[in-house]
Length: 158
Image 1 (spheres, rainbow, N blue to C red):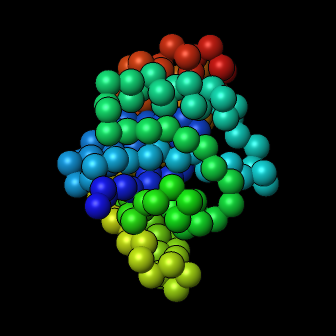
Image 2 (cartoon, one colour; image 1 turned 45 degrees about the horizontal axis):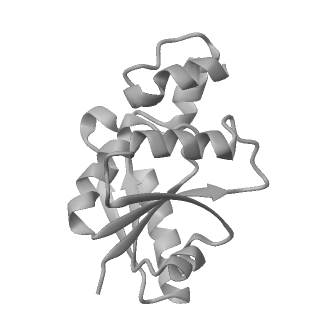
């Protein structure tokens, strides 16, 4: 049976920290779907179409990675695409507590879907999409925090 994992997120924008988590998870699975979760209650900085374009560009040479968008409960999307695993990055103790609670709720709904927590490397633990957006909006240099393939595209958005 093919091992499929979902790496869900808003990716607004994707950062080098996301890339690190994904690359470290990749050897564990046959296929990883990078799922852009759509949340109608949040106004994103980057349009969904642009996020999809950026992710396709970043992962164009990774045959095991697919990019998709979804709405609704992430655990339900896992069922829809046949993913038995959900990859979650952990930067801090508060991330762990939050992700643990979600994982336990997901287990109650779908016990056959496992959450896989990958701890961020120390050099990446402070990087978040929120901070990258703030740096970008204020004219700072984001090049060390985002994949080189999309840095120019992000500069065009500010």
